[in-house]
Amino acid sequence: MLELDDELMQRFQKGDEDAFNLLTRRHQKPLINFIARFTGDKDNAEDLAQETFIRMYKAANRYKPGRAQFKTWMYLIAKRLCMNEVRNRGRRDRFRVDNIATNDKAYSANDEQIDLIATAPADAAFQPEVALERKELRNAIQKAIAELPEQYRFPLILRDVQGLSYDEISKILELRSGTTKSRINRARLMLKDKLKPFMELL
Amino acid sequence: MNCLQAEENFSAHLEDALDYQMLQRFESHIAECATCQREYARFSESVKASQQLPQIEPSPYFMPTLQQRLAEEQRESFSFWQRLQRVFVMPKWAISGVMVGLLIMGTVTFLYHDDWFNRGTQPSDEQISTQGTGIFSGSPINNQFLPRASGSSDFSNTISGQPMQQHYTLKRVSYSTVSTGGGL
Ligand SMILES: [Zn+2]
Image 1 (cartoon, each protein chain N blue to C red):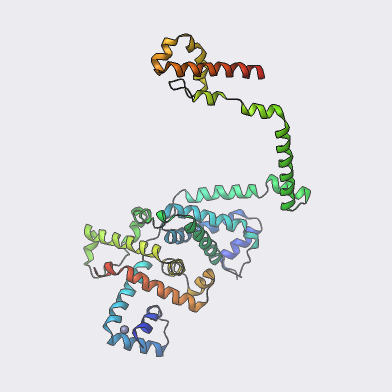
Image 2 (cartoon, rainbow over the protein chains, first blue to last red):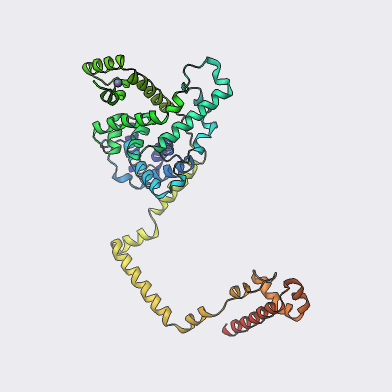
């Protein structure tokens, strides 16, 4: 039994354009999030996500269902595009995190889920200072992630932001399972140290 | 287990991936090491925080733009060049070779053609107009008015304040008009 993604890819390979449109709809959000977290630039993330889909579209006839997951293939292409992008870009905009952090409209639904101030009273969400602290922490996390070296940033985003399995991450990053695990642990330790000033507040 | 080994197992413990023996060793170290206890608490807190980062919503333009670009891709995949390639059954490098050859032949023909070469060295209206300082510089429409302005020198003087330069410019324009007229 084929997965839905594979089935859609097979239909597209047989000439059904709508099948590919459906695939892009299914995966647009995680892809944009992955790229935005990696590059620290939301606007550019959409361009890179489009480029990823276009490359997949062009190379679709080489895709073999079952051999690799559509998702794995997508992240693999996106990873390469992100690396080129970061290399081509100057340091000046490398850590442009503001446009992600200030996009409050997109975040409002998820704001309440952020259980960062676990010890705060229940009505704390309505206090402006607390909201500011949350926003600051969110910015700090995004900045800290964007500052991690590439080999730690990729697995951390794939694991903790995208929620992929270690197995999937190993395939995308072309790493052995043990290396993936130790890199994710190391990345998290780095992040913990970078966020220390904020953790003292808790 | 020492502190370093405990640290290496933070993720595994957090994700319930330690075997029984390791779990015992880890937990007994944490129980007696205040530093690791504090660091592990911070570790779990920061992992939780990054896992709960809000998701970015794609903009409303994302899908329409993508669909447009994909439609362009589809059209391009049966582009003129691909069809041409199929007709001649030529590899890409051969077509490139033919193109380069044509380009070289074109360049050689161009260089040996006197009329073309000379026309390129003539001053254009654009170049002349940049030498004017007043309102006459810029668009070709203004240049057309220049010969008429030369008759009323008072008018051009009041505007530019530089009679000598203005006069020079006007002379150049009339030369250019005559020569282009002759050429055609
Ligand atoms: Zn310790």
